Each structure stands twice: as structure tokens, then as C-alpha cells.
Amino acid sequence: MRFGNHTRHGQRDGERDDHRRFARAMRGGGWDHDHGHDHGPGHDRMREGRTREGRGFGSRRGRVFDHGDLRLVVLQLIAEKPRHGYEIIKAIEERVGGAYSPSPGVVYPTLTMLEELGHVTVAEQDGKKLHALTEAGRAYLEENRQAVDALQARMAQVAATRAEEPPPSVIRATENLKLALRLKLQQGRLSDEQARAIAATLDAAAAAVEQA
Image (cartoon, rainbow, N blue to C red; front, side):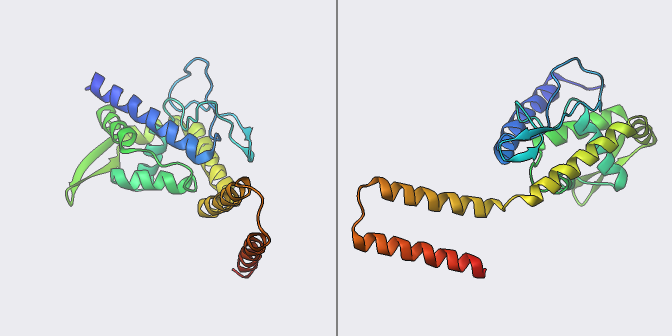
């Protein structure tokens, strides 16, 4: 098999980038990583925890998938239908409710590895590589069915939790308003005219939110 250092190093670098981006997206929430021994690809070692914002998946490092889990997720998506690499990235993003989007630096080396293992075949379609499942790949999925089902359930749970949170744009706007008001108040005592203007602006914003 053609597992070179370049592929392995590229995948590890991509994973580190993904972990940082996911940690920012979830504000410290994610799937917990068991720092014990590796029990093999697809072994379910995700633990449910709590984040500062409520019930979620505790994570010390913002890690999304444990060793071998991304391989199973990608295989399951290809089992549903042949897919391009970009389609796999978007499908994972959709299934976690936008909480995480794997980078090409992680997905494409994983696809190369799956091809070298004989779990997928690759065909050119409109200038893109279309990945389809092989019988060996299907057998591997079935051997790890319990782990695959657990991963899909966890992804669905993350998506459900994400759906209950305010949209990021609303959170950003709320924080911007709070920051602007705090900075204004730190400048010193407000004049009566300034106080009336700020109060009127806040009242108008509240009314607009209620009517939205």
C-alpha cells in the first residue's frame, strides 16, 4: 500500500487545523477523546459531557472524530451513494448541523487511504473523482456497524443541539451591541441628552426584535 509520510503528515496537519476550527465553532464543545489506548478503527470512545453553554459534548482538545472514525463516516456516506470529495465534506457539515466542516486536507487523504485499502473505487466524472463502495468496503462497514450507528447517532445529536442554539449571526449582533454599550458607558458620565438617545435606540431595537 502507498501509505507515505507525506499523506500521513498531511492528514495530521489537516486534523490539527480541523480541531482548532471545530473548537472555535462549538466554543469548547465537541466529542471527547479518550486518551487511552487505540482499540482499533471505529471504536466508539466518545463521551457525553457538558459545555459552558449547556448540554453538549465535552472536549478538552476540540477533537471531532477519534482514530478511524472519519474513515467510517466517509465510507457510510459513500455507501449511501457514490460521492465526490466536496460532496462528502458538505454532507458531514450538514449532518452535524453546521457545527463542523472537515477540511480537504483531512477528507482527501482519507479517500486515498480507502482506495488503497480497496474499500472504494474511483472513476472520473466531469473532471472530478467519483468514489463508490466496493464489496470489501461494504464488508468493513458491516464489521463495524455498531460503531457506525453510534457515530451517526452522535452526529444527529450534535445537529439537534446546534438547532436549539441561537443563530451565530444573532449571537454576534447581540455581543456587538453589548460591547458598544459597555465602551460608551466607560467613557464617563452620560449627559441627559446622550442617555435619552441611547435609551431611545435600545427601546427601538427591542421593539424591532419583538416584531421580527
